Length: 257
Image (tube, rainbow, N blue to C red; front, side):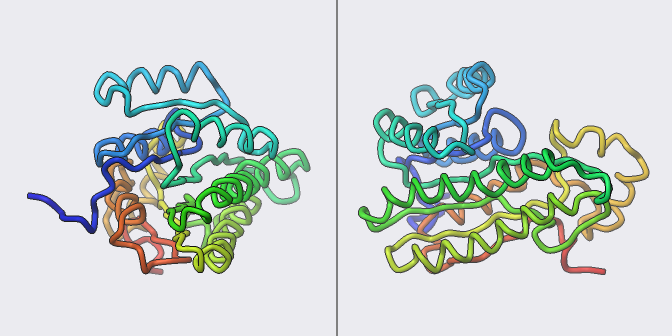
């Protein structure tokens, strides 16, 4: 059964930052399964090459990899140019690069604050700006920023992280305001608590894991494949009149007290 043209993204070129592992890798596989050509990005050439080879076993020459630092403006400009030279014009940008650091606010080090801001927020600004400079003359494009339930709420010990994700939500809305008139859609995808290699310690903490299950109406942690349908929607013609929104995929966590 075909979903029809509303969800047809076959042949489009997607660039996904932070995609050598975890949620980024799952998003890459989801778009490959939908027929996209996917460009992986991260800072580690070795990690990217390993993931590219794994995905290429199934998807062949639909997978590319370009390593560059998305927090460095010069590297971003050169990297995006190289991506388009090799894979073609970018139709879909997924700003997934992110990191976490937990500490009480009074103990939070300056360097950790600046690293979170650069990785989680500045990277999306730099990548969005550079790719939009190329999308705007073409009159179309999808930019999807990976936000978080922490774009709306917070727990102790992660105030700076929540600040970056809250900032990313408003950056998404601002990018919509600037780029919408040129035919681009900019939206956010907000995962709840998901099982990945980056959250292994939290999943293994039975007290915390029990809190997640109790706090989430779905009664479980998210699985990375739970994000794919929402990503395809935000990448496809079905969302052409959806702009400046954050679609939360959280099992209902934000909807209940």
